[in-house]
Length: 349
Ligand code: GDP
Ligand code: MN
Image (cartoon, rainbow, N blue to C red; front, side, top):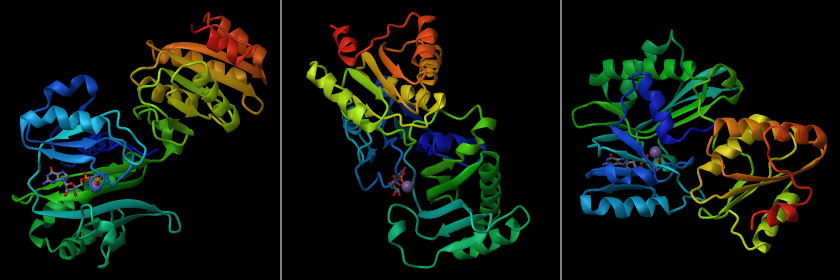
């Protein structure tokens, strides 16, 4: 699972890695933001700076306009559900540093580059690359300080490496990247940006992890202002469901194919994505159970109702594999069940 920048930075901060002062803002909390401020679109991809997703605002009078602009601006198809508003850092240098799993060697590998920031992928000069462990960290810190030409900052760099490594291990990361690692004019290191990929296989021992909002659930946002969310299985049925919603005169918010080997946890993550959308009135669930078990979906629906008390109304059509068991489950929650999609749609008017 890929974390958003603000989630990754929260994890860094817990490991005593300095991050800029800042706060997460949603469309409801715009009023509190004070200039000067850096506003950063929270989308699960990098390269936002070049695509207009990172904006420094100096004037208080501009803050609201820029926030609205960012909320309405998709970055490579992702519309942010939140922004990060941070203090503006004074930057003396931008470095690149990351830890990654080297699967061939079964090691943790440190990558670093002298030129961090948005141009790092275009650099051609040598990359610093070393396997790193608790026992080699002291010598690596010395070499890295030389590579960065920061020998005076060796103690701070050493501490940073130690914190990064323990953060990486304690949080079951697959990748942890700080780009830019900012050096301020006073010589402090601050994580200007952060990316973390968590190892989904370690989910069972991390109840504190957020429900994954970015994994591939075949969730395609069609219209942020749409009033009907759709959940279906199989790309064909999912498309037909979207079409039927349009034909019935409504605006579908999304396309979602939950696929064949779906789990209640994945379905919960889909609901999590849907309830972030501002105008949803109804969630249409259209399942033709072949490989997917209808009772699994039903159980996930019940779990979602429990987890999200303000779920929009649901219009459910389940048929096929274990549909009877599903019906029994849903009957306990008084949820209406329809035998055809049209009936489900007609029930809305
Ligand atoms: P990315 O483009 O998605 O990687 O977003 P970043 O958070 O890395 O920001 C891109 C670039 O914006 C950074 O490399 C910096 O050059 C610049 N930037 C971001 N925050 C600040 C800041 O607080 N002060 C200054 N001066 N520049 C910033
Ligand atoms: Mn960056």
